[in-house]
Amino acid sequence: MKKKMRVGILFGGKSAEHEVALQSAKNIVAAIDKDKYEVALIGIDKQGQWHLQDSARFLLNPDNPEAIALNVNSSAEALAVVPGTHTTQALSISEKQTMEPVDVIFPVLHGPFGEDGTIQGLLKLMDLPFVGASVLGSAIGMDKDVMKRLLQAAGVPTARFVVFDYSSRSTIDFNSVAGEIGLPCFVKPANLGSSVGIGKVHDEPEFHRAIDDAFRYDVKILIEECIVGREIECSVLGNANPIASVPGKVITNKTKHEFYSYEAKYLDEHGAALKIPADLPDHLVKSVQELSIKAFKVLCCEGMVDCFLTADDRVLINEINTIPGFTRISMYPKLWEASGISYPELIDRLIQLAVERFEREKRLQTSFF
Image 1 (cartoon, rainbow, N blue to C red):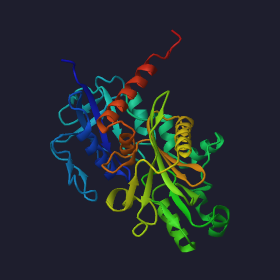
Image 2: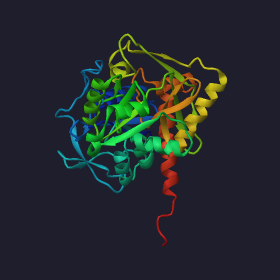
Image 3: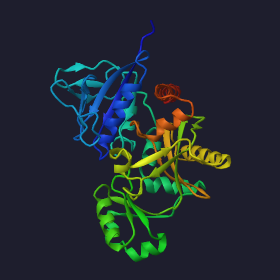
Image 4: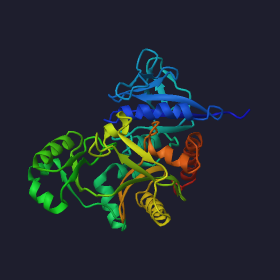
């Protein structure tokens, strides 16, 4: 019998999106092909400590998105990372024993400290293949300012925006921004996802509240024009030759939520409806798919990405999500399912893409001698 590949699912993390990552990990564990893969669960708590988890009880309140939590108890051994060779990559601090090796890591870490290139750099030092974008693509995709500037340089249409860092906070003027960007507009932390810290602004009091809230999460913020149109998402998958899914449409419940907020995405099951595939004419479907793939390549992504777009008569790239959600209502797996790739097959493809990239990079020459 062929030996199963051992997949380390690295999940949780220190960011404000910790609970979303727990939901995603839960669904990946449930969907992964158990006949082909053996799962090792490595949970990262909100303080950044790594724990080897018991797969039978790694979550508390798993069915409650608001109360879900990492189950850290005496059975969840604390781990230390040992860079170098993937045969001794994690060490149990409590027992001083080497963790059984894993063949590939599946990061399920949304936001800073997981989706911004930090964990990807560590995994490279550990000499381990990992799912998703590598260091550069992850860092670019996390920083909305850098991402949008690269898209603009490549001729990819995106919404107008202005950027302020913490040192220039006192210079932010409502009338100046409103004149340049228009109202309503969105205020966002530059380095966060899942709509955390994002505010939709209609007037000056809302503007100042949104500024204060965004700076709670990042030292750099983005103020962006509000595009009126349909909210379209398209998923991309691949390394050198990526493919795009059918597009889907997000229909936010405007009686409950101003926009597709964190609450609408993850906490309120009636916060938004998903139309998959989106009711778009063929020429617009093609435009969405082609622009998604172009953005994927411009931003140096590999493995997976969820391109979120807005569409009226034009197609604009709003942002890119290098580790999209894998919750039961997340668009990324749903779009691929509608495109003919089931949830277990999607996980399988992502793992194989990770191994393919790792083996390709291992063949690169690293010395003159």
